[in-house]
Length: 471
Image (cartoon, rainbow, N blue to C red; front, side, top):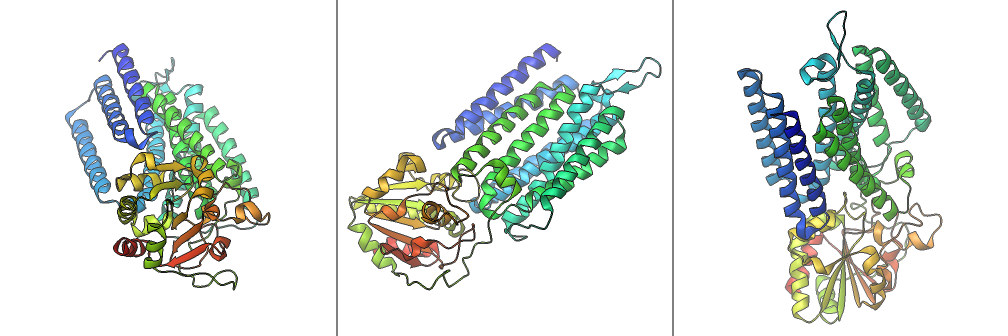
């Protein structure tokens, strides 16, 4: 394939990737967006193979084995992974992108002639990387290594292999700043000398820095971490793309990096926190679902599935607020069935989604789409918050921090200033939760003790199934 034709094909793949992002902006067009993304990747891979050629049979076998093994693994994981584990799967995928950036950079460093990059030394005839390529490579490998180790830490937190609480220690920020300065110095050394030793020292320090950056971030900030690592993986790919002079990598990396950065900003705005505030001082603790006592001794009003069914059946409007508890219990299908039963009784049903509900951006939207909840019944915080005051019932299922009135009334609260759903303004609040335990932010929810709140203590799926039966 000629270089000009390859460039055209790469631009086609880039256009398909843009259409993929456009499609993924809405649940209604998400499937089409995924198809565009797969088509774009197929065009990019095929173009690269045709442009570079396959040197020998052994290389062809290696490529085929890698493609079949990777494709089979991806297909099996996609079919088997539960929706509750999607955040950690995304984190795991980000780690692979970061690792790939490091490995490709290492290959380009040791064999620049194989990639068709670098300049030939007139005296020795050896191929050496240009200074600009070394700058791009150092940035790509540093960001890639941070992405890899940081994503591994995020995966272990989300998977429950380690505590989701932030791990903090004295002089943490000073240590990170010092390591950042040393990393910059090592990158400068590598750019000036192209020494392999400097390359691996940059890689090792960046890996350590990735761990140290993510361990102090608590579970409540995990949605931001996921989107942030997504952005990092894109910039790593773009950096290596410039090194390899590969248009497809540059376009793809820029799209992923920019979209991830924008999403991180949206998530931070949803929590009324700055990006640096999240990175430098995460808050959060393990889910307190196992606790049986509230932070104070005030009484709460308890109810049953039959009580909830009676109240909702006689209501004119019900707003459902899903959270991570719904995801853990896999209650979305039972919830959709409950909503259908209510609508048959003439009840107006809608869903309120907080931007950081769950463990990754759009987590609740994906779960509701899986249960075939109509898209026109699902509303974001800014579109539905004003409707709680006119609603008879707010049915909260597993959402805690995003409904806590302390964010509006308690300046001493860690979540003060965070936009929350105004569920307390509804006529009655039905709150499905296993216990009075604190949420991921590690603070008690004063909504539990409000006069218009009825607590429904149970596993979310069992409670909703009981309500459906009572209806």
